[in-house]
Image (tube, rainbow, N blue to C red; front, top):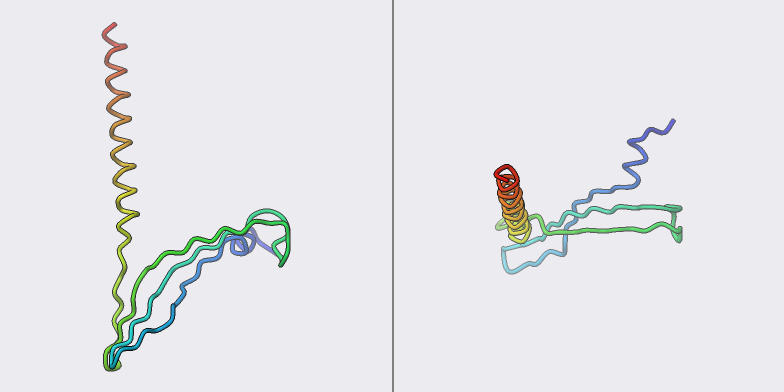
Length: 107
C-alpha cells in the first residue's frame, strides 16, 4: 500500500553531491553541493510528459591535509542579502500601512 509520503518522496528528491577532487601535494579539496529535484505533472518515467525542476547550491568544501579531513561550510551571501531585502520591504509595507490607517482614523 502506497502512502502520501511515498508520493511526495518520489516528487521531491534531496541529494548531497560531491564534485571532482582537486589535489595539490598533500592537500585535497572536494566541493560539496546540495540539490533539490522536483518532478511535477504527467508520467514521471523517462520521456514522460512531466516537468523537472532542479536547484543546486554549494554547501561546503572538504579539505584533507595529510589524511585529516575538515568540512568548511559555504555561506550563501546572496541568500542572506535576499532575506534582508525582503525583511526591509516588509517593514516598509507595514510603515505605509500604519500611516495610512492613522490618516483614516484622523478624518
